[in-house]
Image (cartoon, rainbow, N blue to C red):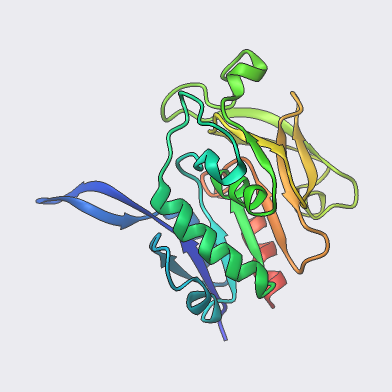
Length: 227
């Protein structure tokens, strides 16, 4: 049977045709990559209840990018530039907890990687320019940064991407402490770019956006782990 892979989604104001309303949506790149990887995508609205029930119907989970995570989830005060979506936090943390309990294969992208770290007891850097002195990981609104990344020898990230890769970034936050996860990828400025859990069937987070680059490899690795 074709695996079912859940993709977390936003609820956002949206306009199309004659309509101007709130909509459940997700960038098409995630759906395309899950389909190209050989799975059937299922869009998951960010509702806080029913996480375990949802997971019982899924074979894998993709946590997508988006707004910042509420710092209360990792015991920190909010930075002035931290912009959160509490509805997404509660819904995604519920689904993620159930997925981890069931040892479901999980791929986290950008915010999704940060959510993985927070769920595993980690913390975040809330505004990278304060640390780096530049905005190269999010150059301007709607513009992706580009930089090299390196991956730990023998890691799942290296098996998927090779020893090094050029990646596309759009984030002003990053993982600081990965909690129980293992850091396996770094940018050339040492910002954490990949985390994973070697003890699980498949738990991988990447800080960049492979779905925008139409890079099916991490999605194919997720589906391979399912099978």
